[in-house]
Image (cartoon, rainbow, N blue to C red; front, top):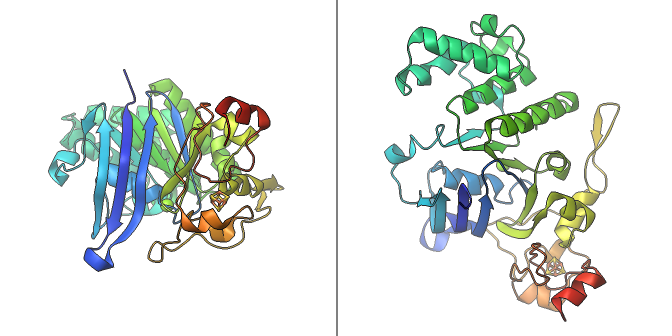
Length: 335
Ligand code: SF4
Ligand code: MG
């Protein structure tokens, strides 16, 4: 029956003509029903732009330059904001990093949760109230019924994120997109929230797209991972494979930089030297070449294509492919 959400060759740019800046290039991704896909890369690599484009939420000046966004086979690209409104929330829900700014500070949790159920879902006030209590209970907020009367500032960061998750799942979406859902939280709360998202995905049969700069975050949750760099997918693999045998030098560098958690202090090991390129000044050839220790002349001149040369469902965008094992080489022939 195919993927529930599929992006095909998606491109996103800002501005027009000579001032146009391409921030997402030819991104193809797919997620099956109930599956969890991690999208990983440093900030500015196009992760959020890709997902905002898919949801029709690009900020002013942003536009889709190519490709398709297929929800159960139906292309969402070109739909008007009015046509997209019923898709967001009901079909594809988004939770983002900052629960404090995503919630309305002047409205109780109960009111902001119930409003869409009453206005769009046609529920009665008492039925909505009942449903909100169930949802807060489902996301592990203690004393759910009493919490409906709380304002966002009266809840801890973790509880606010739980409330936001409750809202996101309230319409039983087919796809939940979580964009850095734990970045603003302390490490203990982070892992609780991740476990919650993962268990809701299994319980409700949602597909999950988990966007993060930290490969450590996807380890226990994602079935597959796509690594983005400079607006392009550079490697995709099953999570276990990616961790055990990364092929792209950028993925390897991300793995080496995973936060080690000791005494509640997340410490970055071996941060990757240099910065991701500014899309206003695109880098020639492989965009990672200024930071890559395996770079050769071809890397500066030619864009590597994303290819699955080994037939191992593990495509990589690298001319050199320095970590490919000899057994994979044998399967894939001469590289
Ligand atoms: Fe490094 Fe070259 Fe591979 Fe790019 S193509 S990641 S520069 S080895
Ligand atoms: Mg982002």
